[in-house]
Structure formats: structure tokens, C-alpha cells
Image (cartoon, rainbow, N blue to C red; front, side, top):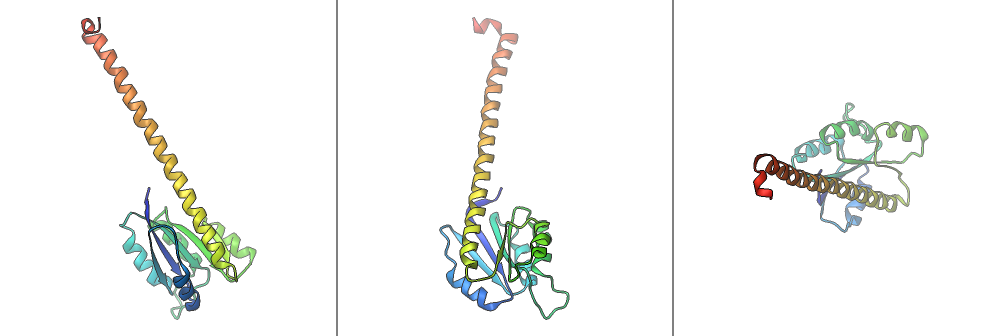
Amino acid sequence: MKSLKHIDFYYVDDDLLYLSYFRKQFQFNISHSLFTFSSGEAFLNKFARDNINRSYKIIILDYVLSSVDKKARTGLELVPVIKDIDPEAEVIILSGYENMDVKATSSTFHPAGFIKKNDHTFIKLYSTINLIVSKYKYKRKKSEGKKSVIVFLCIIGIFVLSILMLRIFWPHLLY
């Protein structure tokens, strides 16, 4: 599992006003880095390079990323690529559309959230990010708890095995 000591946030949106506003307003109560991109290709280059660091990653993608390049991918087309690079990365989709087809299509890629762009976008975004971080913390604690139980059981097993070996090979030591 990735470390939660530091979280890398990536925000990809072709709307420069949203990017600027988000950059100014983004404050989070944990150590983090914020990277913003106006194109999916620039984001993917940085994301692929950053994959070697052990930080937990949260990506916020605009559903529609317009570009001069006709081969440029939409935000939704980036999700499977992101998951191939880092399966633990969480993706939040932002869209100006409240279309059920958009939600249905994006749900097949299992984004952590789908948020409609409006006056409340950033409030919903912060609550979604808090929920993602809380779920990940819970998952980490649960995993660490399982590891502790396994270590404890191994120690008990070694102890019992030692007693049995003493009884078999050196029975006179026990009496």
C-alpha cells in the first residue's frame, strides 16, 4: 500500500479558469503536492514519471478535454490508462453534464466520484477527497491489523513448535 504521509493531487481540466481557481483555493490538512494540467497528454507524461514515488495519488479529471490534437484523449479515456500505471490511484470525474449516460459510462471505469460542475463543485470535491482519504486510511489500518495478527500467530506457532521439539529431542530438559 502507498504512503499517506504525502498525497499527490493531479487536476486535469482544459478550462483555465477552473484550474486557476482550484490552484488558489486548494488547501488540505495533510502534506500534499498539487499538479495542474490543461491537457491529458501533459498529465500522463508527468504521472508516468511520478509512478516510482510511493505517494498516494488522487486525480481529478474533466470529462471533456478539448485539444487542438484530434488524437487527444478525453478525461474518461484516460481512466483505464491511469489504472494501468497505478491501480491504487483514485480518479474523480468532473463534468458540465448531468447526463445519466455520462455517469453510466464513467461508472464502468469505477471512478471514486462523479461531480457536476456548478457553483458547488469545489465543496463536493473536498468532501469526496476527504471520503477517499478516510476510506484509504481505514483500508491501511485494516491491512496493518491483519499483519499484526499474522505476526502474533507466527510467534505463538514458533513457541509451540519449540516446546514440541524440546519434548521430542530433549525430554529430560522439561522435567
